[in-house]
Amino acid sequence: MKRRGIDTRVYTTEAVPGLLANSSFKIEVRQRPILNPSIFDLYSSLAVSKMLIDKASSWADIVILHTGTSVANYAWRKHDLPCVPFFHYDQYDATLFGLLHHVAPFYTYPLSVLESKCIRTVPLAFANSHSLSDRMRERIKGGKLIVIPLGVDVSRFFPTWKDEGFILMVGRFHPANNFELGIIAASRTPYKIVVAGIRQNRFLWYYRYLQDIVARFPELTDRIEFLTPNDDELIRLIQNCSVFLSPRKYDYLGLAALEAMACGKPVIAYRAEERVEGLQPVIESGNRIRDWQSTLATLMADINLRERLGKQSHEFIEQGHTITNTVDLMMDSIKEFL
Image 1 (tube, rainbow, N blue to C red):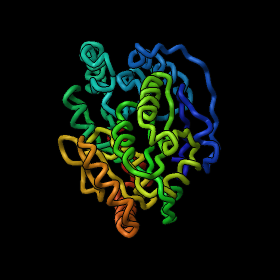
Image 2 (cartoon, one colour; image 1 turned 90 degrees about the horizontal axis):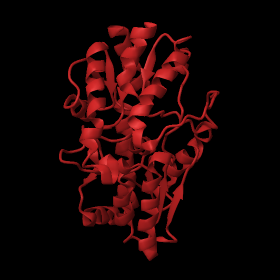
Image 3 (spheres, helix red, strand yellow; image 1 turned 180 degrees about the horizontal axis):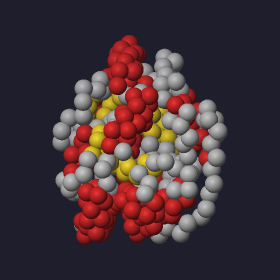
């Protein structure tokens, strides 16, 4: 957006300034502590989103709403401000609620009613993949939902063709990312494993759960490292790793995997009930640990195979998953409908 001369600001209550410390643009972060009980997180975020919309309404011409999506119609109604909700994950997925997964449908029902009403009353909404769009369609009815593929900033994420012999996983420490599968799969290998992610208070239990897994495997104690890198440190990790694991249980690739592909790295991705969306040059594995172990062993033993798959990954990103392409699709959609 900035590169197109569009004044762009981010209003959020969960900024991590260190992640953007070396961004090519000046980032101004203003923080205000907000009480947000985790058990009511999905609902309290609606009130927070309303507050942020009120703040942004004093200058914005349009708002793209990434959380609290069911209050998008509030911006239209109160401020006559075009507001496009953007779905990034399935917040109704019962597996995200841990031990409370049995009551998740009852907990989320009022929210799904609100969201359906919202989508019917706003002219446009975004989803980051066809898979997620279809899943949201099962729970929300009506409205125009446009797929905006995730894009990578290829001016920053690019191949250096370095290969330092370690295995990498990246993402939030969130149960949807299924890091435990990757950790267990890599436990039978002699290689170093790096898990780079962001810790959130709501999912600290999951971070501790991963550490407990490591404690149960003595052979992992000296080989696994949990990191919270800034943006530049993350790019170096991706550029230097040998293999990138993406065990997240979705049938489309997340941004972290796409960034690894942009850096020319081979990716092993989780195969859900359906195959990974699209024709990505990734290796797919299901729930069987032995399949992940076998694939890892094959890749780590053959640097030429890693390089060949890495080149295919990089070409795939250049053809359709650059951030330039993503922003163009967003802006074209906004112009057409708004």
